[in-house]
Image 1 (cartoon, rainbow, N blue to C red):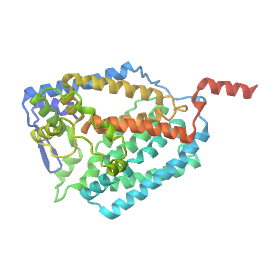
Image 2 (image 1 turned 120 degrees about the vertical axis):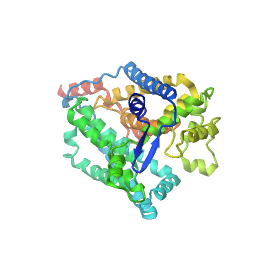
Image 3 (image 1 turned 60 degrees about the horizontal axis):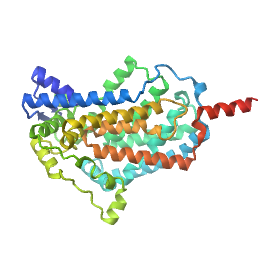
Image 4 (image 1 turned 60 degrees about the vertical axis):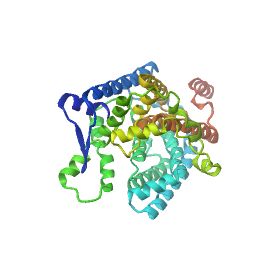
Length: 397
């Protein structure tokens, strides 16, 4: 989103992009564009460096099913909670749609007013990750006990389409594709790349109903095959880069402690989230960038708070995500904590158009949920390969 447009701007002089019937211009000079490009590229390299430092080297081979050592009772116990939480989300989604219709603004306001209930989907999605990382793909549809949650997930996916919740759809796709790739040895195939390229237009197809008025076929085609945030995110980063204020240092994480508290409790006790020392400055950056909606920019926020030291944040993020993916790659014996890997990775991608505080809050919450569900399902030492080996040896004897 950041780099590919800047290359087009710097090399071919492309100074904007169409998004359906909206033209979004890049508003800054070539010098600022170069600085923005270096910042984005350096942060990407930093993320990769952190990932490599985590020593997450996945085996490019299929998984031997004999290595599957998780006890099925823990998987099937998780199915019960998946069904309950997905049923709740489906009912909740139907109620939202019945109130707001298919009007995006009305649906968005309703979701925000009941954000805690909407965010409870994380429990179901986490448990689905846990199940799929511990059950081979050839059992996902054959196992009768897994069919009902599969049906509920499809229904929930359709509800998310009607709610125009692109982030939820992305999460649903990730929790299926990530375990699939782990079970198949993380092999990259041409068909996977083709599917990925086709999938990039899905968010725009979902956003299409948001645009009122008549769109001609050229505007529709251009909009479907465009990237909504490729120019707007660069405008935000470039506005921060051009302003070049001294770094705020602490503002980036100031709201996390209160964000961790569920919104109903915050509302009950009147706990308002502090805007931070840079609240007005963020508004100024958005005004200078010409972006008046659609979130902020994780890269811009990091630069505003830490200047070029922001790259370290991406190094640490790459390291942590690498560690989680390494744990999740041990399919068949993945504990609840490492089952958070696909959701945290998806959250990082989604929050590139938001901020580090939201990403950090989400990551901490999903880890806490994993610890709680691990206790609820009472998962014990079944994930210890040596313990399982000794158990099998005793049984054989």
